[in-house]
Length: 186
Image (cartoon, rainbow, N blue to C red; front, side):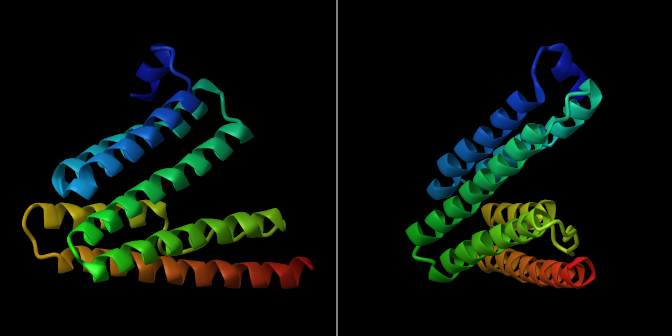
């Protein structure tokens, strides 16, 4: 698929932008309306497309620091759209628990990324953790799909609680990795 997109003349950065904006539009269009299956499936489609950008860059020999920066930045935007859209749906459904968990999942996910980026800015490796972006998205979308197919709303609560817990553990792991690195590197 990556080779096909390259032959079509698409750059890795174009695919990054299209994937991120596809996630954003899909999440914010379908999920707040309660169209959870359509929202989750369309978000998954665009996440798969967004996942091709790195493969395209490596295949075409077009890896760049700016491409990595753009991808990471737009990934955060796409993640925010997903969790905000779920919180919005929960608020519209008068589900305070779901809204709070979606907000907590958003914050915890951002802290995972921030901890790594800040450690790297200090010259430390903190790329550890049990719960990465893919884990957050798979668990969240599985819970969203389950509720969309008729499972009770606590299925989404459980998924979001797992995301919050897993992300929190990962943040702590990254803080500890940075602390160890700071002691050995000064």
